[in-house]
Length: 210
Image (tube, rainbow, N blue to C red; front, side, top):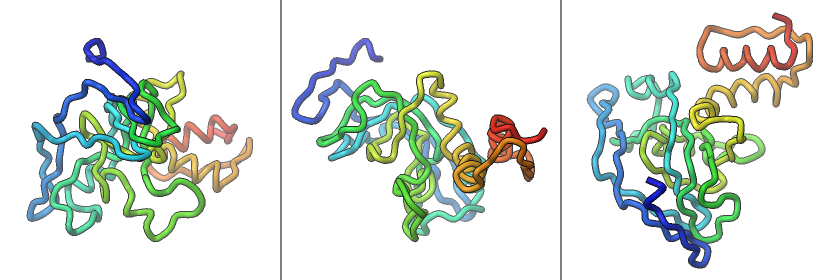
């Protein structure tokens, strides 16, 4: 695909030979829970001010996503369709006016709460969760605020990066940001879910007792 794309700079926006529609998965509300369907010809929203258009290269599944499908996880009552999955990574293919954090070709991963950039969460934080309150990553293209993305380190693949935003960041936040782990600490992990497995790896990396 890249071989057929040409890139030029016009003001603060990249004019690219990009498609206008895409394949996209959607959850459709049923009497109980949702059904998963693939939508052909879903529109691609071009990036506005301080937004970027990302071609999704990899996504990952969390238990939360299954719970939403089955109707056991709350999402806004007015949403009858939803693009699932909070976790995904890809490549910037276009930027909107005023964008400064990323450029075309950058590798990025989406953050779970698009509106939680710093400080403590607020009452509005949950209204900015991808794949729940907001459409998620299970699409060919997503358009997000440049503040809702982080760069992918060179040593990580798209697949690696797509596994980190929900479970891994939760474990890191609990053990490191809030827990201030030190070598020799004891860590109790509940179950064998994604957060626990990431917690185990982080704890061992910090020198927790096996």
